[in-house]
Structures are given as structure tokens and as C-alpha cells.
Length: 121
Image (cartoon, rainbow, N blue to C red; front, side, top):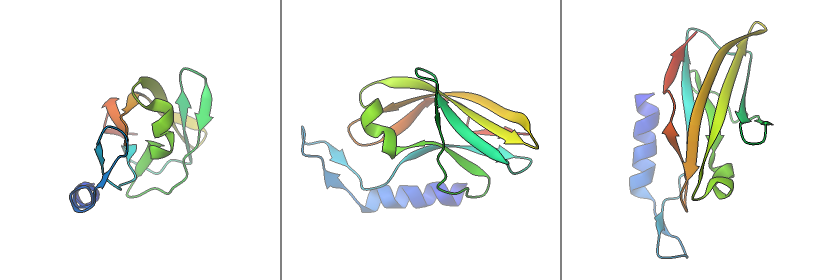
């Protein structure tokens, strides 16, 4: 996980672009909010947008048991507001992860306002 965060930091430092509105400086990184699941690999996982009940399935791969809850594809939907999302993980037909997150976005990226970093199943 530390290597992953170091890579993100390097990308943030290395690349930047100027947002056309209000001279906001954005980086070119594709941000995501994720959770580390210790103790096994999930058979199924998804995110529920609490305000609508919509199920979001982000299948961009799992890196060392780190699962994506939401990514920058939802930046415009969340810009200048925050919403509650629930991450659900299933193993052997049993719900083993059920965690709430508050996620927001600025003009550039989504960001986690609250929620756990990891769980053990």
C-alpha cells in the first residue's frame, strides 16, 4: 500500500495542468477512493450510492487486496458537494464488508471525507 501511495505522490508532483476555470491547478492523476481488505479476497464487491440506491461496480482491478470504492469518473457528479456511499464485499455468499464513506469532489478530483482505510474479514 505504501508503494502505491508513493507512486501517486510522484505522479502528483510530476504532472500538473491548469484548469481553465478560475485558474485552478489540477494534476493529471486519475484519483480514486479505495479500501484495503485483509484476511482474504472478495468474490464480489460493489458500491451503493445512498442517495439513489444505485449500484456502482468498478472493475479496474484489485491491487494487493485494495478495492476501488469510487473514482474520478464520478467527479462531475460530486463536484462541490458530498454524498454517502456504502462499500459492500461478499465472500462465499456472505456479506463480509459493509462500510460507509462520505465522498466529495472539487474541480479536479474526488476525495474521501470520511471512512475507514482498511478492514479485516
